[in-house]
Length: 384
Image (cartoon, rainbow, N blue to C red; front, top):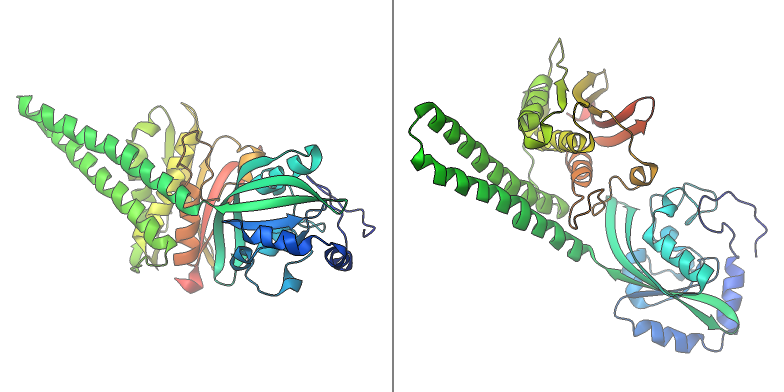
């Protein structure tokens, strides 16, 4: 084992050298038999040593590790082989960062290693590829085995991305859309019974608003599917920054989730125009506004404002309160949500997807006791 004393926030930072792994493979009489067993798994299957390093894997793992070269896989840990965005944060690598505390794969491996019991958990990983960040959803199964007196972990991975997408789709069409459609039906049933013209006009406006909301919900889900598949069409046109702020505010100023809460918008004194896809930008900004409104209590405040510099344009949504550390570590993952209902958790993920992939911008956040919570969309003026 390499003599190292490295810092860790979660699991053992130590590891053995690649030469020691090769000796283990060479001396194991059962390795060829074990390889056949790994190939029999319907999903990705890996064999890890007690330091979480890969010592064997099946052919189904190759596509996920983006390489057919054994030297680029053997000896690495899962996050390192996948190129997880957190795997290089610590000198000791995968399993030792703050994020690893919340990683389902790291948790499952540690449970099996420490307690010698089987474990199953869900895992969300953001990996860096040449074309940008890719979001993966796994269900991982870990179990302890002993091979030639070596304690090893059998690590099986089931890809559940389609399952997570289906849950989101079901939530939209079986919950949000159904609720809005029910509201439209209720208003339509009341309209014929109204005799007062002013009251009638109010209900007509409510009907129009609900119909617009229904269309918006369907289009939002369609655009998310298109965006994930690289099929979203963007349309650049000039629009003022204050108009973008106004549109984002209007979507939620009179919404149910804003009742009893303070929503302020700070407009530029000297407004400027930018060239962008206003539909995508307003959608992203309004998602951040909705998240902020859901995060605060009655009588608490959120603010929407912008900052303009020579090189950058920033759209900022600020709210009272601090996001828990465990949530901050997972905030932009596709299927992660602070809400209990399954299928939620596309808000911040979709914002990052739309802004970074289609508008060449950046999305980040700050959350601490001094500043409270800010989500920031940055667009670069040389690209707009």
